[in-house]
Image (cartoon, rainbow, N blue to C red; front, side, top):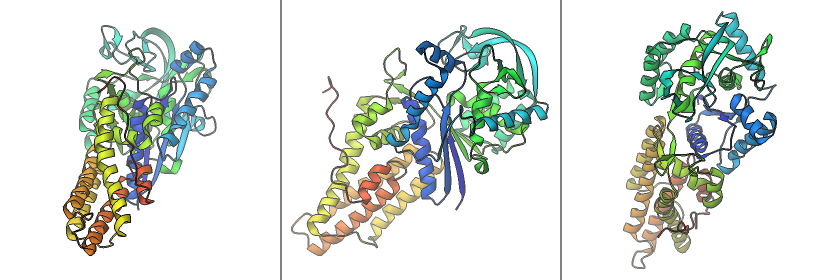
Amino acid sequence: MAKFYLTTSIAYVNGAPHIGHTLEFVQADAFVRWRRSEGDTAYFLTGTDEHGAKIARAAEAEGVTPQALTDRNSARFRALKESLSLSWDEFIRTTDRERHWPNVEKVWRALVAKGDIYTKTYKGLYCVGHEAFVTEKDLENGICRDHNAAPEAIEEENYFFRLSKYAAEVKKRIESGELKIVPHGRAKEIVNFIDQGIEDISFSRPRKDLSWGIPVPGDDAQTIYVWCDALVNYLAPGEWWPADVHMIGKDILRFHALYWPAMLLSADLPLPKALFVHGHITSGGQKMSKTLGNVADPADLVARYGTDPVRYYLLREIPPTDDGDFSEEKFLERYEGDLANGLGNFSARVTALSKRVGAERVENPEEGVKEAIAAARSGIKEKMGEYRFHEALATLWELIAFGNRYVNEHKPWDKEVPEAEAKAAIGNALAILAEVATLLMPFMPGTAEKIMNGEAAMLFPRMAPIAGKA
């Protein structure tokens, strides 16, 4: 039994949760649940990132205090635990002065003691969306590609971190595999970035310009830069560090694959073992945006379709490390085809047939059934070990398809089939269904429990077509 520590990134609370957050939460939860099913003792950390200029400006625009805004939006993220059946062990907030602030101050002092924090006047382009200074190479015609806005020209005296001092060592750790980055293309991306030359980075903002944040220890005139603040959240569980895997989106790769490891090297702390980097979700082939009105609300989806269908779609339809598309049409296709007609049909008919003929699950299934179950187990283990959630589910659905074929071939409902043979066939089908429920638990825990509890008569009711669609 191994110790296993996984984190998601912490969600920025200038707005409500969206389906991109949901993807990361569900991927992380499925992976943690799978590791627990393998016998590991796992700790799952998530939370909310609550400081910075974006928060202050969003609060001002709403006419509320930053604390009121963060309290409200953080609660929305915390509520996802129940609505999405998430199994995190701790939810941390960066405004928590008892749980989070002391670690930030401790790391800051460690960097200072190493001689890696210094002051200088800096003139540069600041992207509020990134909460980061950017360079011309990060822009397209003077506009930030990610946030479709021009950065602000700023000149101020800040504390800087000697990132350049650690860039070569971070590159070495990545290339050696000591810091594993999945997919490999993201590792090449960050190595190429380092090879272009790394400059030191600003690690504070004047408090007169940004009061919403943690003061620099010993200098109340400066606020600790949001990334230096936020990344330290991962140290909260103490004895669980180093993390076995950080699950993050591709837009924050640089901060996790370069800034964070450099900070840890400076503070003489172990590096995380792996970064898993997922893509983004588009809608109908377009980037999701409030302006286009194509942002999918996870709470609305769960309210209409249920928790497990949402979890299933995100894990099955969205490629784990690439961008993937969400549309309600695709969602309903998966719902009807894979869930209602696939898993739902198999579980309902096997349950009904077992009651009709009085059959019970066999403890020692016939050879062909054993082989199919063994193939599913090994296939899922291999694919989950490589974060290939969609392929793991495809493997599980092959077992469900095998179960449906098995029932069709043995026809236990046929009166011409001897009773003993019918009971044996249903007993074997029940063994398949029990294994499906066990293997399904990391992905769709509510559905798995229903099957285990004999509540499989109607797992996925038929959905009405979308208005205006045939």
